[in-house]
Every structure is written in structure tokens, then in C-alpha cells.
Length: 213
Image 1 (tube, rainbow, N blue to C red):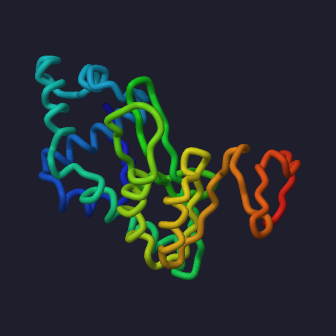
Image 2: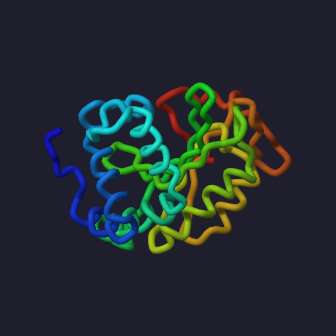
């Protein structure tokens, strides 16, 4: 396999401090393989892994590497993400974060991402133990881990209808320099005047039309 320099220098410096030499080399090879073959299944990665040992030995080798206790988001990714923030954003800038849940078959993920250049850069994710929607407690728990990384910035949290609970909104209001925009369901009631409530669907709002309440 032709060696490609796909890892930026500041990534390399950090990863070499966190990983043993053999671990770093495996990671480096995996990055190249993922770019070339676009496969993420363990068996397919083991089949392409450039080491002259039996397939089962390659599979176990990769499995052990991916199960390393220090291969965590907090230890590996967050220092890199924080460094990248300081190089690309001034403390006065507004950062937009999206909280979302996505399900691939039996895999259910909750993800917090930074919106940058029309892309979502994952900051943190968790594999949920159950399928289906999350509740406010889990949403707050996940956001609480991410917010300290962005404490130097003004942040706007974006969420779809799954994240429209009052408990989450109240928690976000208590966070410093934090705003939010959570999509509401059409059957939600809002108080447009003291003791006068209307469902959102009764306001006649259509796509492309906005009002301020």
C-alpha cells in the first residue's frame, strides 16, 4: 500500500503522545485504508490490512486496538478539537451546534456537532442502549459534556422536534453565553398573550415564512 500523508502535523504530534508507537502505526494505516477503500466493517479492514499474518490474527489485532481503554473521545479527540477551535475562531465569534439522533439499523446514536462551512463536525457522540427517541435527561447529560469545550464562545444550540422539551430549554437558558433554536411540533401550544394559547398550526405559518413571537 502506498503511504499517504493524511494526518495533519498537529494531529500527529498529539497522537504520538497518547499512543504507543505500534498503536500509532496501526491508526495511521487505518486512516489510509478508510480513505482508499471506504469500508468500516472489521472483517473488511482485516482483509485489507497490510501485514503478512493470518486473517484471524489481523482481525483480532484490529479488534484489540479499537478496544483500547485510552482510545476515547475525551482523551484523543477533544484536545485536537480544542486546538482547531483556537486556530479557526476568535473568542467573540458565535458558534452553532446541532444536537441530533441518528439510527443505523440496530445502532442508535446521539451526536453533538459543530456547524462549520455547511458541514457538521462531530464533537461528541454516544451509542444509546435502546432504540427510539431520547429524553431530556439524556440530552442534557450529553450537552453538559460538550459545553465546557466552548465556554470561551457564544454558542447557539440547534435541535429538531425530538429536542423541544421545556426541561432542555430551561437548562439551556441557564447556561452562560448560550442561545438555542429548537424546532417545535405543529400541535404545540404557545401563549401569545396572558392566558391566550394557540397551537402553532393555527398561526398559518408555511415553509419560507417567519414570524417573531
